[in-house]
Image (cartoon, rainbow, N blue to C red; front, side, top):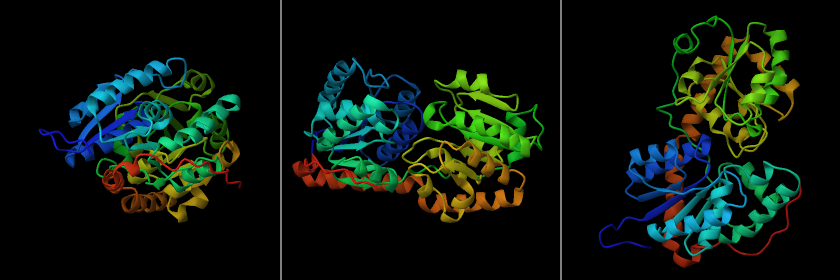
Length: 391
């Protein structure tokens, strides 16, 4: 382990791209906990609001120019990251999401213990030749991952079925249960939506406006919801590449907030929070909503079933890309305030017991200790290729 005479603290380098959404929240939470625990924390990421937030927490932030998707710029991105690694001399590298996992593992190539956290698999996000290339890369790069951290057992199984070898840890996502806590819906709604009937049933969807999060599926379902609950309103919280297409399709009962600095008031304003994702590892939005005491409807993608109390699954879990099932679940819950309150209470208790960010941070800290104490043997995973597990 590298320890200088002037600073004996273990040195951790997080590498991240993207710099928004759930990945940014996970990196921020880990950096906060690790700085508080006395580690020397550096984060390599593009210039962003995330970078400013991390500096405010006391992390050392190094500018790493990198695009969100792989492309011709990759070679330069790897070189720039290699220079950061040479300057920082970390004891351990933690690469977040596909792009940072790609550049980070090429730059390090097993010379330093490297943790890779996919935050949902890249090959699920694309199709055709691109998916095959992404999958091939993940299979080959696993040899340079001392540990692959999945946020759900379902995400790990997806990797195994795809033929990705290596050493695995499953550490469920956690959220700050002090920040995300219940409050009166009517107060939040009056402040956020002063022109909307306070008695109108309100559905909120928080997430980047992109294909992954499935807001287009929710809009397809919304007509059927309105036929059964005519006064219902839907708010899409966030921005992203699909915003223009979604706005063009949305009826007057759908409102767009754009990017928001804090989603907590929107969770509290909601009668029901919906996340119709096409794929995930384990989404944060449903955990945040449940921590605020709000019931959720989510699609049965990786991590969703594990993030819910088992009793909620029959009413709150629907198949992905199925507007009819989504509409049925939403329309069944909106007219029943007592049922929604019960589901919200159960969800809050579940998050407190299972998805507190302190548990997540402690589990990651334990993983780091094990890898750092193991020395060179912990730097890389077994290199043998494993045949895919077929369903």
